[in-house]
Length: 281
Image 1 (cartoon, rainbow, N blue to C red):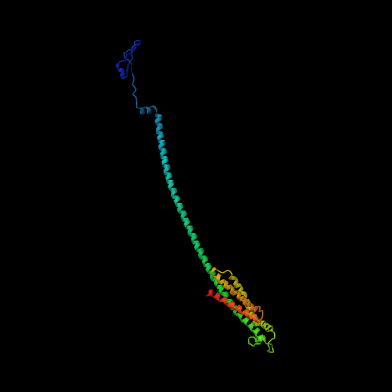
Image 2 (cartoon, rainbow, N blue to C red):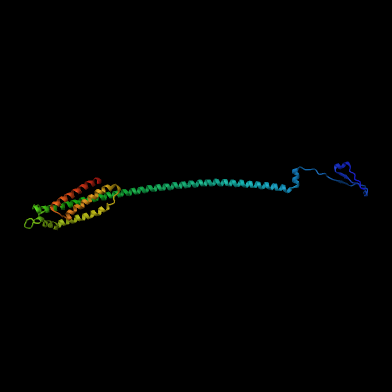
């Protein structure tokens, strides 16, 4: 039976084995087996030793986390820069739009001012042209009215002198026969007057003057605002002139009615002329 002896040195890790059944070695040596006792490690080191892959995973996770944080910081920085750039661009666009609006407003205002000036110049030119045409019309009416009054006065005198047998150097060639006697019918005297070449030429001139005045009057039918009031008097002046010309171009009635109607027409012409000339002066 084997006998095992454990001396005190076992505490130091030395173990002695002795067997009675075995033959001791020839050299009489004793075999010793040494065992190094295990010393317990701290938990942290123990975990690190036991799990090296866990240590690597933690390091990689920290590195990834740091990289992510750096990337996020860089992204946020780029976003901040981009936001600042966008804000600056937006401000620039707003300023550009504001400048564009201001420029457009200035252009519109300038165009409006130019338009007002052009319209004002045109209106002034039209006003001046209208006044010039108005003055020309009134002058032509006065000239034609003077010729009409001369013709009407001669018609009246021939008519009157033939009836009342009044001698006059201006009417005798129309009222007297070759025998130097007055015509019994005043119509014969008036016929002599209207057949006279000089008097016929005067009547033709009056007719042409009236036609010309008709054309001028049509040009004045649309007066500017400042001449709308005077236009009514001008129209009355024109119509009174036309009434007057009828007494020489188409005389009718008796001597008495002819005389009274003519005087009324002549006074009307003078009345409206006095109204018109206030504006002309």
